[in-house]
Length: 506
Image 1 (cartoon, rainbow, N blue to C red):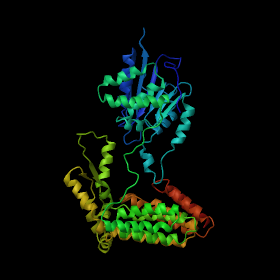
Image 2: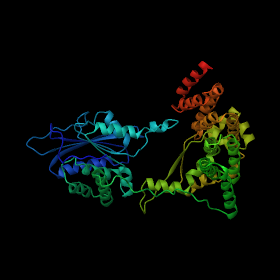
Image 3: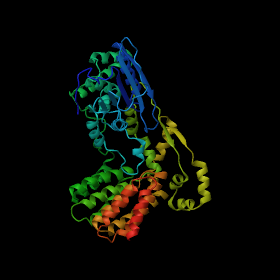
Image 4: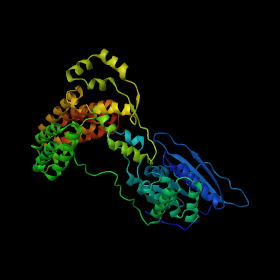
């Protein structure tokens, strides 16, 4: 939504123009502030800029604040911080920061122009939720349309990346395009040139932001950096086996076949073609109980693949040494030709991870010996930093990633397969609506180390709760409630309450 006011059409009760900016590290909030301050002074205004740093790790943005006023007979008295209900222009470099500015009262319908990027940079609190903890951008947008006098919203981050710059440049362009400050476009561009750094890319991004704010364009060019389909490569004999596995999915419904092919790709990439055949065998065991619409088979295709492609040390090492990862990091860091990039991996192996790589029987004996586990913990349980941009660090992880052939002999694999078979036995014995919910319980298990252990504990508790309600007509609904409760918090307090409710009537 883009609306416009005439340049200089600010609140009538003061000659001081007040601009607040909310941005996090890497978004160029300081640069944007200096441009605005320089713009004002170059055009005969007095200006003052301040900032208060936010908390690290995306739990709070830095608040930048600029006040400006035309030069006159008396010097104005500038404030050091924005006040609720007293901001003319609010610029937020991320959607949830717009929501926070509204909640703090900085955005008011009688005076505030709100300029915000619609992209998301997830907060730690959103990432910590075991399930989907991402806050709704739609709710923030609806609130912004009501709270602001003028709203300028677009994906300014994508526009900046497409033009080889950072979001501060597109936000500056949006500020110019909004008409909220009494300066012409050329004055804004002169402020960028005066900085003397990254001028050309900043001007390109500025123009994109200006056009987005003025309604010329609202969308960034499509991102073509990631391939949408991966075509397998390898020896002809293995490719023929792969094609045969794919062809065997032809008897499934279109919905189920699409998900099954994605699952097959995942497990073959995780291990090998034989593992893919095991996946299809397990899938067909559940598909034989499908009521005919393909819904049960599609759910089984998804969650069996996730269970078989579990996160172990070998997979983690593989993910950290894939060429695509280096390419992605370089793109996100905006690496320029001739620049060098150093990548340091932070690893903290526990005794459980070390023992999980041993042969199944030997590993089980060691795991059952507290003294031996304590010794291994003392030897290995410490933070380690490995430089994977160097030959030594990369080779260590690359060799570990190449241990796929050993994986099926390990203790971890034996434990995962025992979990998988026990879970599928329950699914195969249940009516389709209940079976679907039992399959979806696999959502609770993810990651490795402590995260995996907590997920397994919640999974076991939900499955035990499911036993209490499986005889009821509304069993599927109650299993869904138990799972959603387990996903609400890391500690499992909501699940405790849900289980108490189930036990009260069973």
